[in-house]
Structure formats: C-alpha cells, structure tokens
Image 1 (spheres, rainbow, N blue to C red):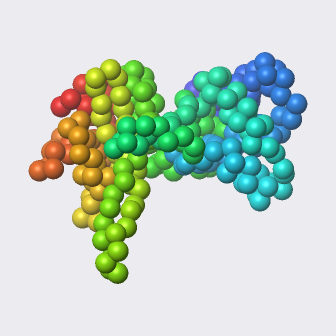
Image 2: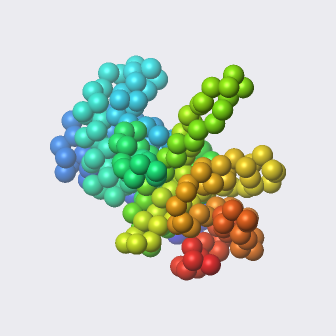
Length: 241
C-alpha cells in the first residue's frame, strides 16, 4: 500500500468486510443497519459517558427508530467481544466502589475508527484520550474512569456537592495512577481545570497529566506530574519518572 488512498481503502474494507461481517454472522444479527448505526454513534462520541438507555433515546430522536435497551446492550457486548471497542467503567475514588452506568467506550484501533467515519471527525483531544487509554491497557493496567466528590460553599452560603472526573484510574496489582489527558494547558484557567479533580484526591498514589506537547517532565508543589504524550508513549517507565 503506497498511497494514503490505498491505506484508507484497506482500513475501510477491513472494518466492513471482516469485523462487522464476522459480528453479524457469529451473533446472528438480524438488523445489520442498526448495528452499523450504533458503531457510527460510538465512533463519533469516543470518551463520552453513555449507556444503552441514552443510546436508545439517541436512536429515537436522531434516527427516528425505536430500539430497546436490551438490544443495544447486546450489540455493545458483541462489539466488545470482537475487540472493536473497550469499556471503561466509572469508579468512585473516595468510596472505592464501581458506580455502574453510564460508562465510556473507546476503540481498540483508532485507525479503524477513523476509517469508519471516513476520516471526517478527527477530534484530536478525543483521539489523544483514546490513544492514552489503549496504551495503558497494553501495559497491563485495568483502566477506569475516576469520580471525585468535591464540596464547596456557594455564594448563597449553602454547601454544594460537585462530581469531578478523572480521565483514567490505571491499576495493576499494588500500582495505581490517576491520569488526566489534556491536549494543552496554555493558560492558568486550563491548568486549574485539569488539576481540579486530582488535587481533591487524598490518597498518596501518583497523579499525572499527559499533554500533547513534547515537554520536559515537571512536578508541581501539589505533587502532580506533567509529561508529554511522546514521552509517555515511547518510555514504558514514563509513569514512574
């Protein structure tokens, strides 16, 4: 395959003629169009919290189709079993428990995901998040989406509770890392935004922000380490720098 067009055609054909055809045949899927549309929806929303109920509402409002939650759950399970997508569950960091639905879904192969969408939706922030997720799993980590409850006092003097998200909680044996994916942190507001959930975690496990820029590793006074995406991907020990 010498040209970009050849590579795109190969990936598109692989997705349609190998992956989807195998899923349809192996699971005796009666309505292939529904499965096709679900794949498109998931591919367009990588890293977004969703569940079968939300997806059913999307089909109803956008596609004008009524599909049951159970059918959509089955389709998602088929995609996971075929190693097309992977599920990241929500984990309450302070409560040390899984919350359940909704969850996030990431594609096992970003090239196949992009080919599925004809390379129209190349949102670099979401793709970067998916790449980090995949790399963590390749390294043997169980990867969840973290949730931290934060209490503050509003202008009215009342106590308010907010739920802050940590992109990834990566766990392997006794190792645990809290990781944020940030395409850039080019101003104080963005820095504060990315650090907010991490500084509200009270345990001693390492807290890391991965940015797109090729930067030198730095660590602030709150113990948060910031590393570049290139460094993270090329150095298997980058989380322990």
